[in-house]
Image 1 (cartoon, rainbow over the protein chains, first blue to last red):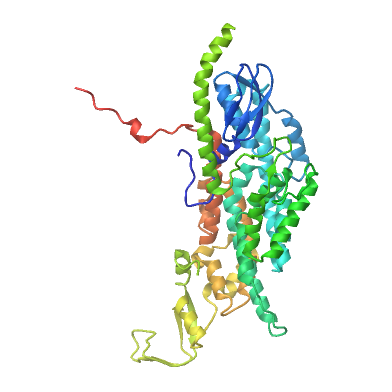
Image 2 (image 1 turned 180 degrees about the vertical axis):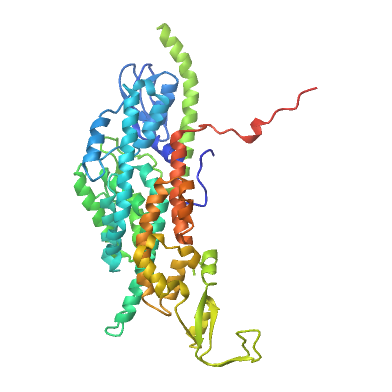
Length: 344
Length: 184
């Protein structure tokens, strides 16, 4: 497949991130009448001329290319840029803003009023944010290393949360750029820190017999967290911004996001208590997998298949390919519809 | 034993360390030129780390600090860690140090984490901003681990830039480019 990343690395290429970004919902204004489209990833439509509708970006672009729709779009870049410059933290932006803006600039430039201005603003925003990423990377060593200092069980949770706090509101592409680097760096930091600590415990061993009981377990766990540190925290934050229920349906529907976040943390803690060590990681995975995660304005399940890891991604790409085929077929029919509509 | 087949791990253990024999050993020659077929107690030599470690565990030798962790290097690292040419001293500075620290000198651990913390910042700044040509001089100072770190950052940044500037959206299968044989 074109643009596929190296199969040996568990990383995404920018092309793959772009592919995932195409699943985001956008608003379009169609100029044709069309029945609703039933895809594997959900039902969209029916479409009426001049009435706005929500569709995934890939569908919007397909319609746009055929001249069947206009994109109704984002504004207020100037404000975001100013906020981004003024504040230290990352401003909340769409998770896929880099990719979405690129796709729109490529395919739907006439739908944006003063396109050049918007484009340069987005470039500026991206630069400012990346500068923040770098300063954060510089700092996170100090903070994370102290969080890792005591290999007490609970501290790993603290560590995870500290990471999540620092990296709040990072976008997919930004995470992907630093993913390989930060993973390696954290691993190295952890190794040296741990090295130092073992020698410390060796020294204190004479005074009080201290047995590092499940050190390998914890090590493995930390390395799992460390491997996808920022990515995972970004994912956690992203998911907790949606409404989240646990497998037993204990999360009350419609409860505010902060409660949900507390809920997620509680679940992680529970998972952590139940099975120490590497189990915790599996715990988080299973929580995120089993819980019904959906955005507030979306209809109830079946939830769209979210790309999770390499396998999930492949599954998703299959689903989407089938959907796209459907559009093609549908599109052929719609040409005829369109010509008849014109007569009408 | 997750890194049993890791080539870097193997090469790390190939590094030489100075040792002092604690026991006299028969049937071993340190130096081919000597006539004696045994090693006396207290004689000094250099052994690869993997051998020295095994002998150390059997208390046959004691390991002393190798040149790349000596006082001079330490002072240099304290002065400005980012400019020290660690590659020429020991390509696997950090890994080697980690393996060595529990056997001979516990303070190596502190040295390593200090050095890495400083050098990490340097790598971070250079990797995400500088062009490859400008950084090549800096690259010659890095150890293997730092080079990997640098390359990881560099490659993902390069991939992103390539994606952003565009390029062919559709890739053509190589077979389609060929010309057909003209039909006679």
